[in-house]
Amino acid sequence: MHDNESISDMFTRFTTIINSLKNLGKSYPNQELARKILRCLPKSWTPKVTAIEEAKDLSTLPLEQLLGSLMTHETTMKNHENVEVKKKKSIAFKASMEVSESEEDGDVALITSQFKRFLKSQKVKRLSKRISLKMKSQAKGKNQHATNAKSPTTSKTSVQILKRKSNSRKRMNTSRRRKRW
Image 1 (cartoon, one colour):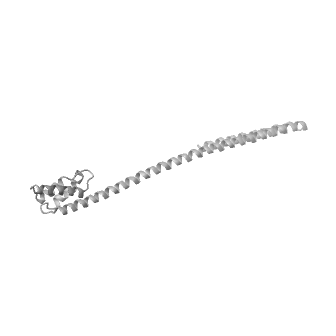
Image 2 (spheres, rainbow, N blue to C red; image 1 turned 180 degrees about the vertical axis):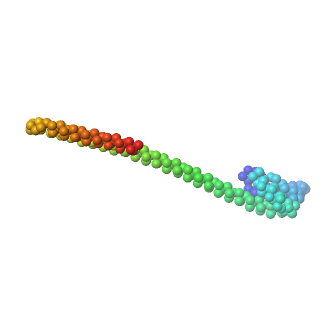
Image 3 (cartoon, helix red, strand yellow; image 1 turned 30 degrees about the vertical axis):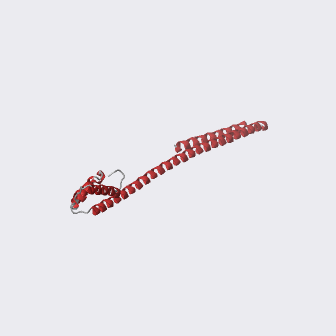
């Protein structure tokens, strides 16, 4: 039997050879023809050949019945191969989907972390602007207090209070950063 040749093709080729031999005067008994057919099958068919040899009497087995049995086995083997190919394809497809999902998750995580950094930098800029504006307004207030001849201790204490507030905010921001990590 040739590679990728079906049982029916093999049987028609076999019958042509047997008919040519009969025309030349050489004939074989049915048992010998059945053995020749079973012998020419590939190694993947060995279990089926063994089952036929043990279960059936080759001397009384017609070639048509042998052909039917072999064709049935061929169709079941093809069905099993198709099922295995379908399973392999679906598994490969699932694996590729999981990979793409994890890549998307990684991209989303990267964008999210970059956006958070941007927001933090914007927040720090706003806080520094507020503090500098307060300091400027306090400095203006000092000048006004000095010109109004009010006590200089009041302006010093207000500056110290603002410095303490800004320092406490800085501490809170650093503690928040530590908690996030």
